[in-house]
Amino acid sequence: MIEKKRSIPFRIQVDEALLRRLPLHHPKRPEIEKDLAKRKAGFSGEQNLDYYFSFLPDDEFSIYHDLRIQNGNYYFQIDTFILSQNFALILEVKNISGTIYFDSVFRQMIREKDGKEEGFSDPLSQVQMQEIQLKDWAVKQHLLLPPIETLIVFSNPATVLKTSSAPGIYEKKVCHSHRLLQKIKSLQKIYQKNFLSKKDMRKWNRVLLQSDTPLVHQDPLPFDLQTAELLTGVQCPVCCRYRMRRQHKKWYCPHCGAYSKDAHKQAVNDYFLLFHPFLTNQKLCEYLHIQSPDLSKRLLAGLKLSQDGDNRGRKYFYSSTFTANK
Image 1 (cartoon, helix red, strand yellow):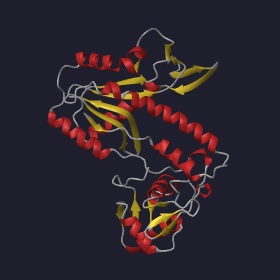
Image 2 (spheres, one colour):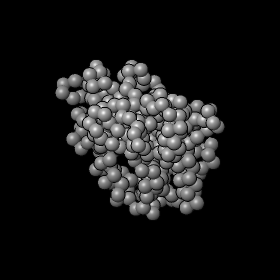
Image 3 (cartoon, one colour):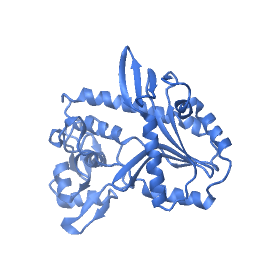
Image 4 (tube, one colour):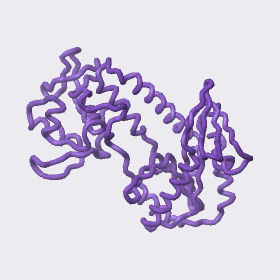
């Protein structure tokens, strides 16, 4: 069963918000567009794995996508976590094209493409660190630990995988997506004992979902950008120009004449991503270019945001109940 669905990665949301908020001729736009295309390709690779997950029995496996959990002063992230009564599996998903070479001596991943070599950190070390952090966190949460396995999955079937050593650890820990189910079946044969009860599974589910803390604000901005370079105001959903005006309980675009009831929702979403982790009545007035604090207060009340403080000191934070207009 999918206990936590896959969501659009945070950096994709940031890149998209930057492209909405940067002037059309800003010199950083090509770099952001290239980064966004690369990240979208990676996300597409992760989505392709959903086909294989659909073959796993719902009553045997709990699947969690995009976990970000705090352990002490730091956070660790897991692309996909699969939990059963017999074992748990951490998946690190890669969507990299070309020829991938695993150097077991220097513990490095090298990609060769179009006659060029590019070095990456070793994904095996990465998942091993995730395993260490997960175990440490689980013990602190008083969760019973099943055997935990790790696997690096390459979602692009055309990617060529090579290693510098004889078949060994990389052969066991790295595979293409079409071999994922085979790998899981092999683990089922190894781990036939129930380490977790149904009650233990429910506790894992509850604690994982409560502990998951997705990013909602980018600080500092990537690409050496400053918030002063970004456009403020409400963007027209039709012509994409800025500074829509509030008229008769709607947003009006003076450029194309379009109206919108909730165009401010996307603007608020961009604010949390790029400008600041919380809003105040005054900040919203300045950001949306509106003169009325009463209007700002009404808009904030309709967004279902988390709140802290009273009266003029009240702060509004991003909430999972808030949905921007996509």
